Image (tube, rainbow, N blue to C red; front, side, top):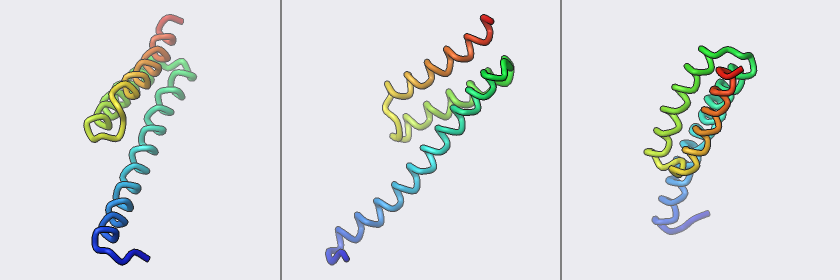
Amino acid sequence: MAHHKSTIKRIRQTAVRTERNRYYRTRLKNISKAVVVAAEANDKEAASEAFKIANKQIHKMVSKGFLKKSTAARKVSRLNKLVNKIEAA
């Protein structure tokens, strides 16, 4: 058990950050999955709508400091490629 005030505070901060990051990680998986599922179903409209939401949320995660800018760009690019592949087919 921690004895120093600063250590006790760090433990509290870590718990809060862990919970917040868990939320963002789950959200990221779910919004990405929504685009992939719509794309696999060859539903252009649903995939584009899901992509718009995903794009906005992923970039919001960058501003919150959860993702790096390049990681977000890579994820958005891959999802966009997936959506565009449907439109070409």
